[in-house]
Length: 253
Image 1 (cartoon, one colour):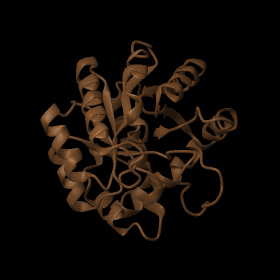
Image 2: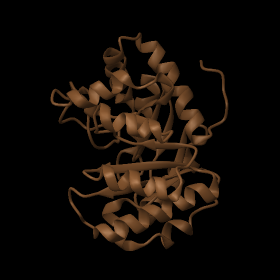
Image 3: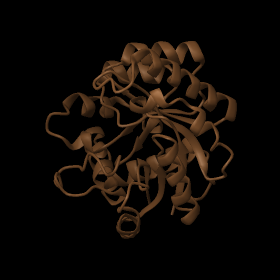
């Protein structure tokens, strides 16, 4: 069985069909990730409707940092919640002022530490500040850099912090050599796979709707970069997703 460690099933119109296709593809666990208070609320609802298959995170994306964390704090306590995020810094678009992004990121790191939840990080063109804030606030024991877009240098710095990396469909893109190099050197116990659906559909289905079913293609690409059987990556990422998000311990099928 595969685990999609990061997607957005709560986005309108993709839940039912995406879950059916995921089941057919052998995807047995899905983390539905929040990006603001309304989307986090919907993620919890999707998880509640699909117990044992879908879990939720609550978070404030850096694009929405200007909205403040109060809305997501009010959601904490729901049993479906297994993480804080996605949160972090995005200096590519700067939809929220950078100072506010940094403050809100630090606040969410604090929430993950206080609540004993996994931390799901989004970082884009902001590596130095991301690492600095993590060091200052204290890296949560269970931390993942989602949709990893760095290369070997950034990967090693993430590992030095004790974090894991989650690879998306980007690892299949022709231009993503640095990402594949990072996947190749990553210890297998620090690797997760995701779709980030509905975004980043992997090759060879670019242009088609993305969904958790396509996490199998991401896993196959990671296996190819590492020179491993696909089954090894499948088993490892299933276990790593369970460990990172504190999911029930089950024997791998």
